[in-house]
Length: 65
Image (cartoon, rainbow, N blue to C red; front, side, top):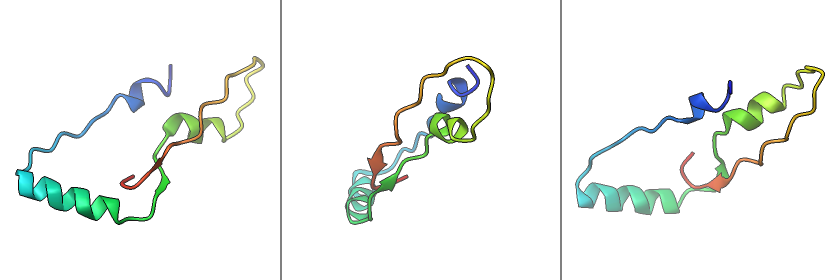
């Protein structure tokens, strides 16, 4: 699938426990917003291919996009 493989990404960060706790506190205080969702974004472009498609789920609401 064109949108399946690009979504299989993950950045890995190794931080101290104190740095993690600071990030967690900062993230919890941010305004929630929709997460990045390539499948949903591409689907809303409206390409017509002649066959039915399944509408992807709305992006989840997260504190740290």
